[in-house]
Image (tube, rainbow over all chains, first blue to last red; front, side, top):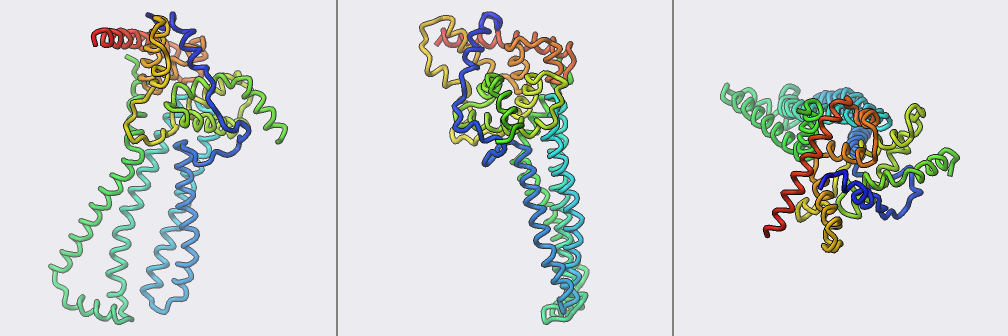
Length: 209
Length: 168
């Protein structure tokens, strides 16, 4: 039987009301499962955490007696100050998208672009953090020996051969690769299937044949 | 409650049927449907300030509802994702041939992709190709081509399901 012949039957079924507990709660949906709302919430949480941590790190950078800690904390503060506008911009873009009156195709295109940007930023941020953390964790105390640990590491540095540096670079490479794979796996687990579905659907929209 | 909120709820009440249809089509179980209903209502309220009355309210609401439904994340299921449309199939008697056909067609519609579901929904609402084009953001000819293809696929799917059922 053709769809037209069944139209009224299907319409009747589709029009059965959904049971809704409260119709007056307009402005707030607890634990929203809208993808964009969730994404924006994650971004705001990350931004808020950075903003919360940065004053402490700045204070530590200013007050610390160990110069290496000053540089360490100051660098992280700068990195966070650089990241906050990036996240805030992305969150702003999501908000604009939420409030916009898009057609379905435009909406999907924009959503896909936002998701891909989010994925890219997430990977970039994680990869950037690995060498920053490793170099500062290992090299600063060596470069500025002021503590027992620094002195020990300075001795190690004096004794270091090219094999030690090779191991250091190798470890850095392994850590970066592991971070890349784990971050990619995580972000794909969260949004990968959804993005693939959207891409396939958008492709079929562009090319109906 | 503010006047704008009251006006908004009044307009929503007039077009509530439309939201129910979207929820029925895009969410599988009652809890999911309820969530989606609230989500659409919430999204519509957020976007309502930007509604300039340039198009009909129903057209605007369809856009909002479909965009929200398409990006709505389903609840994680423990036993897979195959409950689509089965609630009605379960509850209906198999005596009436017309009802059987409707059930098969409804199940076939539920198996469509998100965008194809949206097009069929608008088609069932007797929207013109121009309205569909405005809501979906596709050209009129694209809508026509897709609609024919979807209808053909639905027919084949129903026949296939029917023959499989008769064979078993």
